[in-house]
Image (cartoon, rainbow, N blue to C red; front, side, top):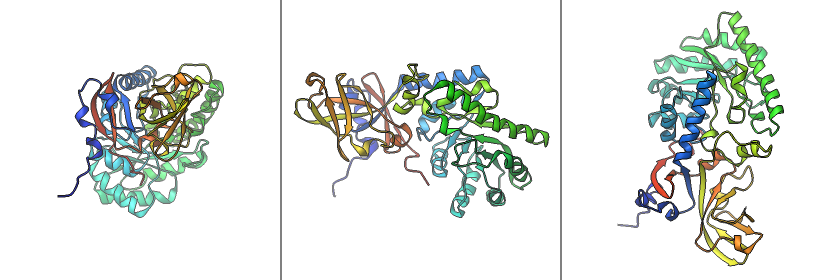
Length: 384
């Protein structure tokens, strides 16, 4: 019998429950601090409850059924998935009440949507084009179940969504299509989430949501009031609920927090509303020079769209991380005493959590220095 590689989910499984097991992980490893994760989940749930708004967190951030189930237990009414493949994977893992936040258009995707609707509880999908209404209706009828449809509005991002002045007619068409039910409106101002000036973020978010409110009011005049008004994100969690437009919040990155979102607040000398729970753990594999060392986490270990990660643990204050190749990262220290030693274990705050999680098969769950569980990332790579 030939050599059998250890499955990715099992490489570190022998360390579960072992004191000090966190430091012994095979690296690079994606690590989540369970106590911080739970605090973030509880904090968001309380924020929404206090504001009288429901929470439908975006699973594209974690892609993990275990985290979704923690969010559900804390009061989430359902979940968002960016792609059909994510929804398929999470439905198979026992997650229900999913809103697909990107349009489903291609024939092969519509066939899959039909199969998913037959199996899933509470599935909804967005639409932003009148010509897709009949196709979605056909997919719903083929599934043997009605399909909930949410009209996606463009409130300034211009990525998806119909212009607000055309949205009411689209909603009427959805409501009149056999097999479909009109559920409400979605609007995501993603272009505002990382604005560092809090006043600017608030002013522009209020203006964007006013467009959504206008469509709601027009539909109410047409006797087709939206049941849900879904949108928002982590960057406007402390802004949007007060405007009274949204009935549910779609924030996702709050469970982890990354450098990009932390910067929204820290660059303005404010405290982020949630704590960092997610890290990539890496090991120093070469340290031949006084102020430079090399780790085993390079370009393949992080999403690189937002620059390098931030060293959180394991190096002195003058040390910083830089990409040193596909497989390696570099740590350069201003002071030799701050350079990590050979074999040292470092923790890095990821630049952008969503696409970084997508690089890993597993999330290593730790409490203090102990590995307590390993969660599969069921929707990893399901970008289709």
